[in-house]
Amino acid sequence: MPPDGSLVSTDKPVEPVETATPFAALPGAVGSPPEHYGNPIAEQRALARGEAIVDLSDRDALSITGDDRLSWLDSLTSQALTRLPAGGSSETLLLDPSGRIEFVARVLDDGTTTWLLLDAGLGEGFRAFLDRMRFMLRVEVADRTAEFATVGALGEVPAALAEFAAAPHGVPLIWQDGWAEVAAGGHSYAAAEGHPGAEWRAVEVLVPRDRLADLAATGTPVSGSLALEALRIAAWRPRAATELDATTLPHELDWLRSAVHLAKGCYRGQETVAKVHNLGHPPRRLVFLHLDGSEGVAAAAGDEVRSGEKVVGQLTSVARHHELGPIALALVKRSAPVDAELTVVTADGTLLAAAQEIVVPPEAGASANVPRLPRLGGVRRE
Image 1 (cartoon, rainbow, N blue to C red):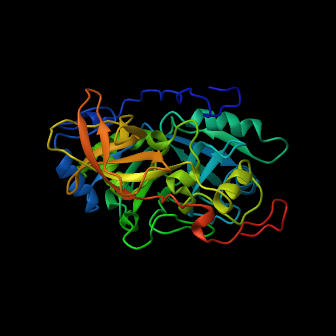
Image 2: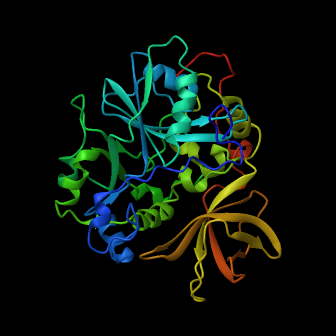
């Protein structure tokens, strides 16, 4: 990892410290945290109905305290956060000076502390960066992963889970994903009509780790991480642990939808965000793929995507959906034709047909006919 804690090099994120989870002791559990409990398809259906919870306790959690916490985080990252209310949720990106995504954080504020939820292994790098940027501001950053575990659900928070939500300052630490709508100041390149993300209502709850065993013992229906991944992919929802590489721009994944405010003040990487959005096009685009499952061969993240004999991209996430069958997200070159017959090449050389649905269209950016951003140094608006 580079000295500044960024992920722009080809280094992989820090491996998360393995933490024993009581959910791994439940009947049928495979993995820790469990990938499934013996029936991933049934678990998907239960999760989609809002009946189950998912152990995400390998994910990281940071806290920021101090009077300047929100304005400080606002000045460093892509989202407008200065007016985030107590109990409010958001999402933000830390970009490098060239506009590439380094870290993705799900943001929650309880009126006293700002909480940052990150995918497993990313918290330490982000904490190290934030520590170096404190200067004389009234902020303190701490890694709270050892104290709090993340537990996920879809829809309303199940009552049993809500009872275990941490609330150190009287506000339950429950993050609500805003992917279903375009955030204020954001922009979506994907067509609004029929967007599958409109039904995506994910929540993440911070639970004290010393109460995780009690939660697991309540008998609340559980689903594994494979179930959550399949539903996430079907919603076209990007994730740091799967969709990012060393060169990813937020435009390529349609992440301006939820994590970028296009009319806020300056932050690192803003110039690239503005140029690509107003004057250019992202070099790659996210697509959703329906994969041929008739061969009985499973594709995997990293498999090549071809148009004819030409390699045009690679898979980033793969799952078997309870209704759609084998599905995937992939990043392909902008020049890949939208009507091309794509093929996925698996590790053993099997060719799988892949039908694409357009998430980010090739014309995303300058041709999108959207308002221009204010010039750098102009009047700040929120």
